[in-house]
Amino acid sequence: MDELKQEAIDATSLWRSVGCPRSGMVNNNRLQCKYKYKMAIKNAIRDADTVFNEDLFDHFCSKDDESFWRAWRKRYCSSSVKTANIVNGKTGNREICTEFTEQFQSVFSTNTVNSDKKYDSELKYLLQLKTEDNDNTPKVDIGICRQALGKLKLNKSVGFDNISSEHLVYGGPALHIHLCLLFNAMLQHCYVPQDFGYSVIVPLPKNKHGDFSVVSKLFEYVLLEFYNDQLPSDPLQFGFKKHSGCCHALFTFKQTTKYFIKKGGKVYCAFLDASKAFDKVLHSGLFVKLLQKNVSVRFVCILQNWYSKLVASVQWNGMLGNVFPIYCGVRQGGILSPILFSIYMDDLIKELRLSGYGAYVGNLFVGSVLYADDVCLISRSCFGLQKMLDVCSKYGVTWDIIFNPAKSHLITFGGNNPKATLQLNDKVIGWSSKVKYLGLYLLCGASFRIELNVAKQKYYGGFNNIRSVVRQQVNEVLLLKLVKTYCLPRLLYGCEIWPKETIDMHELDVLWNNGFRHIFNCCWRDSVKPIQFFCHSLPLSYLVDERQLTFFSKLQRTDNYVLRTLAGLPMVKYEMLALAAKYSLNGVYCAVSTIKDLVWLSFAQKVQL
Image (tube, rainbow, N blue to C red):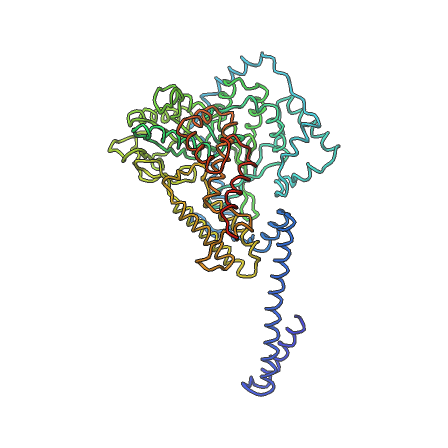
């Protein structure tokens, strides 16, 4: 390549020295050297693509996912994202960093001045009252330390102290012993180092990233090992729990609304937006709630000492801003933070339950469904829904949470939206014909319906992006793996609770089959079932059935009594038994592996090879 490049340069220099002739031996020699150099570049690019694709295929065949995705991201995922030059009219790294610092200072200040101090006296009284109780200090041994180390995520960037997870995990027995001694001393004296409270905030589009010491994260895992059993939250809070997720919250909402629609009634729902709820948690108020739940005094004292030292600074383009104190909010990115926030919101569910309003399935209250700070209220009447909104408003005033009426929505299932006027914080909330809840678009009407247009657009967008990036050089099997990884989850999100009676599954099958035709360059008339069979890929309708059966099978073993009760409703059981019978399953209590095998067998029997 270097020799051909130099020959092209020399030939061009000679051509220019003789007056740039358009014909003759000198010009022909220049064109030949230039053509050889360009062809060499094209061949080198093609050879590099071939080697790269062969390496990807080798990683794929050996099932080395980590190497596969590392090679893919290194080649195609650009890390050279340019930062903004102007933010709110400010230019230059120093001014922009100062602007972000002022913004985050306001974020980490309470909505109401001195709202946290009104709980100081109650916190002091509870600490004095409960300190007399026998509260033995837990001991951190090597086993617990290594168990916590096993939960740290590797291959992450270092913190502000330049310590990575690998330093701790592979530090050896001597380091682990010193960590045990450090954590035992901290537990004994209810004290954490000053650096545990420091974090670096890196502004990102639509988000922010908190960077803090990995040692503090390890200590949080240790605390969780000792005190996790003391930190339960209400069964109607589905966020940040083991074996719980968005699908469980959506399942609760779906079955509650369908229960009343089947009885010929209407269901009125409110979806509330809590403004920056994570960042506005009152510290003293949180500690009071923990003590009221009989959480260990030692655990609360450690948190109190820790949260009294919370400070942060903003990093922008390598420049570090001034340090400012954090007066409220849970630690962004902290291991304990989601659990603490769930406990902070727990009493809202309790107050809604005690209000006497909201939906009930038998004696079970299902009038509120929470996923972290996403609050959904369900009522049989507009009057009851207004009373529940009043409870939320009062709770927000008491605990300094602002529910934003402009971003909150009302919707009706089982009929059209009424003309009733409902208010939140003395401001009217509008009725909507379509609401986005936990990533799914719910439609107002006589039945429970969802809209998949956005999901289809995301699928097509992801598919076309992959094709535009990889062009035609990538092996078809690799391309299918990329589509399954990046595109299919966007389309199938929430499929566990899809009301299939209102969804055109044939259209979705055609969409997925067309993707195979495009990848393998098939005629549009040809069936792709044989290709799907040999690629061990199910049609979309089979995939949805498999996921719904797997989801319902796991529901039978859940500890959440709300989910168990709803899963035991006759209409739910009938729906799932009918689906199980379709694949010759003996009930819905089968193991996940059995479900997968029988669904695949049912598909394989219909494939004409």
